[in-house]
Image (cartoon, rainbow, N blue to C red):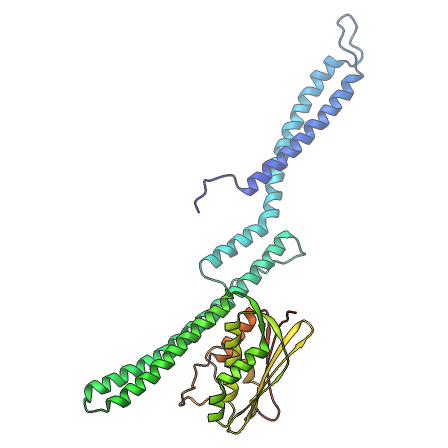
Length: 359
């Protein structure tokens, strides 16, 4: 935004300080002048000038008062310029940091010393903003790099299959079409997951009253064929747990949690439990499964994009891109909730979602 040039803040403070000092001096001289001349008689030519009169005071006090006013003006300008410079030094430091951040360097911190005041509060707020922006940008760059890598893989496989088919016309066409179909489905699912993750991060959805118990039953019914195929028992328990949010996104949240619990439930013949309940002003959803023990250091990384558990089987039709729990975390965060992952001592993982409850 183009702005016309104007006076600097330091010059404005200097002029203000000098004007205040000059005004105070004029007021003081006016008071002295008024009270002094009030009790001094007028000059009388007929009398001997053996006592002070107004004429004598005007001749003697006038030049001295003018000299004092000039001194106050110069003193006010110089003192105001120095004081304004010292007071605005932190602002100059903040301005330099803003220009550094504007050039793309978010790692710079002001770190202003001293006791709290307006400038130091602004400095701390700026440092906190830069820290959050740096973390967010790093996360976005890492996410973009991982997404590019994940999307490049199915495209490279498709190109390889097409090259082989072009060089070998006798290759079975149905097998090629089936493989390309599976690869295309995975690429499409990854793209939809990326869009859903972005939507959850933005939080731009319409809120409505949602019952987590009904969503849990719907998700369990949808994934029942997958559970039966893997000989997994789905156990849905609990009571109503109402919250405010997007029914579509919350259904995707529960579906992802239950699907992950089923796919990671190795070996087969396990159990997946889905429990909903309300605790005061909090609605709780718990999804747990049986299976192998998870290393404690692995659990915190499962909500990161493109992170997969060690039990994930990449060769079957449900091999994901590692976005399931990342999407869940994003949606729960957009609904002002919390997501907790705790490995079970007997094996498996217990995921707890806590959302603000509604009557």
